[in-house]
Length: 314
Ligand code: ADP
Ligand code: MG
Image 1 (tube, protein in one colour):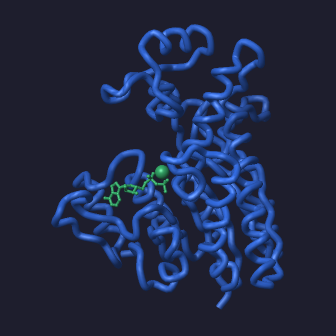
Image 2 (cartoon, rainbow, N blue to C red):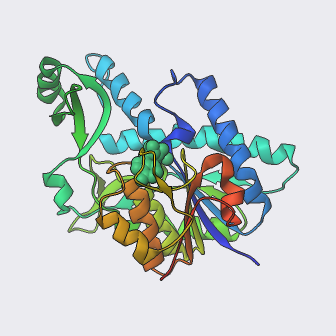
C-alpha cells in the first residue's frame, strides 16, 4: 500500500531550550531526528517533513540585536528563511548520512517554502507570539525605538518581542513539493511554519514580519497534498487530559468530535499542545484519514498505531 505522509517535527527535535546550541549539538540533534525518521523512509511511499524553528529564530534575532550598530538587521520573514536554511541543511545532511548507512537509495531535498497569509488577518492588529530572549523594561523601550520591535511583558519574567501569528492560507511551493515527493524524493519543507507572505493587489507577493504556526502549516500542507496521515512528532508520547496532574488521562484513539470537545474544555495549552490539536482536527476535517501526535523517538510505532494519540474521523 503506497501512502502519502506528512511528518512535523518540533522545536525540541531541532533545538531544545536547554542546550547552548553549538553547531555540533545541533548536528547531534539532526542525527537523532534522522534515526527516528529513517524507518518512515524505509516504509516507502511519499514523505514530506516539516519542522519548527522555535529557539533558532530567537537566536538569529538576538545576533541581529547585538550586531545592529554594525550590520543592518533583516526583517523577520528573512530571519525565518535563514532558520529554514540552517535547520534544513543540518537535517538534510543527517538524513542523507542515515540513509546511506542503511543503504536506502532515496534523495533528500530541502525547499525554502513561502506561505501566504491574509494582510487583513486579525493577528496583525494583535501580536501574540513571543519570540527570542527576555529584556528589561528599559532595553525593551530601546528596542522598540531602534528596531521597531513590538515589546510585551511576559508573565512577570521580562519583556519579549511579540509578533503576529497569522493563519496560513496557501503554500506557494505546493506544486514543487508534490512533484518532488511523487518522484520519491524525501522533501523537507515549510520549516518554521513557512515564510509569511502577503499577496498584493498588483499580483506580487511580499514578505511580512510574522511567524506562522508550524503545526497549522503542516495540517494545511497535509490537506493540500491529499496526505493519508499527518504525524506530529514532539516531546510527549500522547496528548493528555489534565496534563501535569496526577490523574492525567492519556488519549489513545480519539475521534475528532471527542477531541474537539476536550479542546473546548480547555485541556490544551496555547502555544504548545493547542496548535497540535487544532492541526489534527483541521487535517481530519479536510478529509485526512488519521492524525497522530506522538513522541519523536516512537515515530514508526505511532505510524503503526501502537502508540501516540491517534485522531480519527467521527
Ligand atoms: P514542539 O516543539 O514539538 O512544537 P511544544 O513544546 O510546542 O512542542 O508542545 C508540546 C508540549 O506541550 C509537550 O511537551 C507538553 O509539555 C505540552 N503540553 C501542554 N498541554 C499538554 C497536554 N494536554 N498533553 C500533552 N502535552 C501537553
Ligand atoms: Mg510548538
